[in-house]
Length: 186
Image 1 (tube, rainbow, N blue to C red):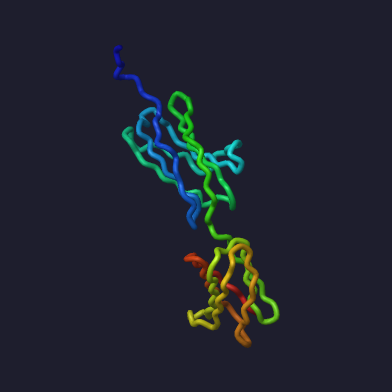
Image 2 (image 1 turned 135 degrees about the vertical axis):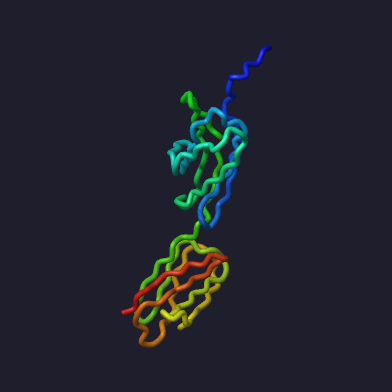
């Protein structure tokens, strides 16, 4: 059997792997033979069947083995399925294995002001201690409160200082994740 030196082998990839992080879903793979690859595309699905391109195309920077990582910072809550689509110069496409990741991005904190109380809401709080700290513009702590939470939906109030008016910073800590946002009290 004679081998032709000009024959380009199709892309060969490692298994796609990943992990859910507080920043989004992080994907990893390695292309071992990517000489004929024009680009890679990450595809996401919520049902594991119907995939759509997410993010920009990734173009190989060399012909040799190369490791890739890609962060899906816009991953929706819940289960997300991923695969990598490799498109060769000839137009032929190859797909990686499919993986399922559950987003670990914390849900955003919402707030309301009512009867001299700051009411904090979040639909996805980790089990453990939730600490809220209210700071003035100079960074001084005006008040703070801790709750021991069972996880899941959170809707709790903390008493505001007397005659609190102006712009304040609220810092919320939960399971190692810290969120800081500004509020305006009239």
